[in-house]
Image (cartoon, rainbow, N blue to C red):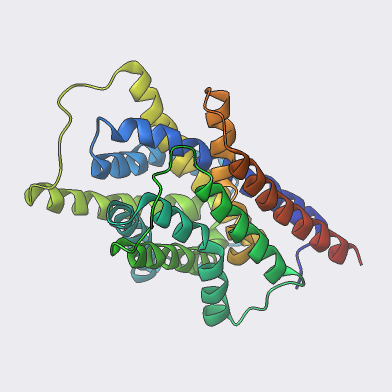
Length: 306
């Protein structure tokens, strides 16, 4: 059944907010990564986001019907998928050309659509494939138009496959979380899965530390850096994951993934506010991405009103 007009509007709002938050994290994480280990940053994001999520659980209204008993095996699998995404993403970005990795990540809606069809047998709404082409192509143009990008062949360096698997893990999590935990509400769903993921990611960091692959900071964070870490944890994990899961519950993973591709567009806008002018290719690509999403939502809204 197609989502209602109200559901489409709510989905557009929460998913665009999630994309805005994820877009803002790009320059923030880049600045923090100059002084702090990526593993520590990944783990600290989840740890700092958990109190916010559980506070929201305590303050939120309980579901009208009693939820099904928790199945810890399923919860562990969901947390494992989130952890696998974080680990594979870290290794994938580290072992791929920056532009190539960005292009692979822009193809996320393709993997989400294929996985949704395989797992759920779902059909895409009218005009979705056209929108998919627009959003992916626009995203690639944004990447290619990055000022100062090193010229030359991109080449494959081994990490690209890891990024594809990472995206499949995230899409799998998004689908199964709605199937297994949606009766508990999106806030509890996000809190439960993020808690398990934080524990598992902590274990991964401990192993990396034991193998000598984790670098501890040589100085305490400055007040500005503490604010940046809080930003990527509270907003980047707690708020953005909640918004994402809410959007997925309304319109499904393939459509939600289209919105996720607008994150770099917001990153460009934020960078421009910070004094870094975007290239004409970035502006054009961003326009194509947003136009693709807008025309899809207009088509879906008209269909819901019939």
